[in-house]
Length: 334
Ligand SMILES: [Zn+2]
Image: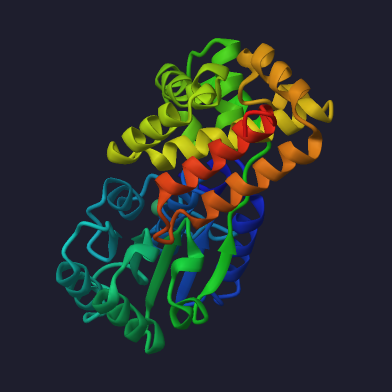
């Protein structure tokens, strides 16, 4: 797939093509941005463009998408291009060995030996050290592309040696138009997925609107009037969410709820509400809360979201948030 077939991300694409044209592509790149935004896709196309066998070579450098090399990379069998996806469960030694072994030999057939390392922030000690060694003394003709949704969790020594490329969310309209072109969705579903995705096209193309709505409905019960009535009841629900390891999802949906509340309260653009189909409840709750309270809750839940990758107790955070909401909604009961 050539670069111009990738929707959005014009800046990273232009930067990479210009670097290739001047033969100044760094040995280590860090692609960072939200999950499902398109980092992996651009990394794959870059690997194809670097090793493309089109004659004459494309100008500006690009992936023809049809030569043997482009095809092999696309189906994951190119001898010089390896894609490793770090997971928190995978054996550390295995990842270390993969990183070290991939760079021992010169490229077999391609121009450069390339490793794309997805979820680079999940590498643990030993593997991260192997990676650092590789990046500090890059073998000639090598290219390592780190892909991460949480670059702050990378070792500073690794990060500082990489050329960073940030991937920004796509505009809502672009996501919506692409969804309509590529998936047969109702207008309401296309709008819902575009807003929920927050500009992450890859996520929007894969997501199941029905399943997401069901998940949201389950978690939004937490902020319903009935749930907030009993503290014991709230604790029981939070506990159950914690046990089923769904606290992260719950926090995500609650963050969206409070962002929506703030938008409704200040009379913002309603097309951007994630909970557009719950307008009645949003309006009712917004009417009962002063703006500064809504902003306080919204800031609190957003700091919870940012703290998720640190080992904070998610259930306690969830309880603290809901108690605060309860207190704001029922000042006398608190
Ligand atoms: Zn090609």
